[in-house]
Length: 118
Image 1: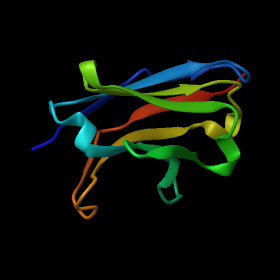
Image 2: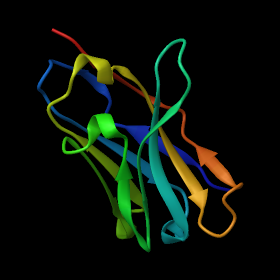
Image 3: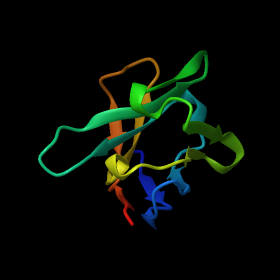
C-alpha cells in the first residue's frame, strides 16, 4: 500500500514560483520512479517531470529550464520547484509513484491546484 499526499499548490502571478511537495507513505521510497503530472479541465493528464534512481530527470518540453524535480529519501518526499510560471501552467498537479521493477503498478495522489493569473 502506498499513499501519496501533495501540497504546496495555490495562486501565483505570472513569473512567480511555487514548490510542490509529495509525501510518500513508504520507507522504500527509492524503489519507485516518482513523477509529477498535471491535468487541466477537458484535457488528458500529461507528464510534467519524472525521476528515477538510475536515470536523469526528464521534463516536458514546455517546462524545461523552469521546473526542477527532486527527492529527499530521508523525508520520503518528492518536490517540484516551479519557476517563472506562466498562465498555461494552471492545472491540477498530481504526484505519481511507479514501481521501478513493475511499471504497471502505480499510485496517485489526490492532486493540488495551481493557478497562475494576474
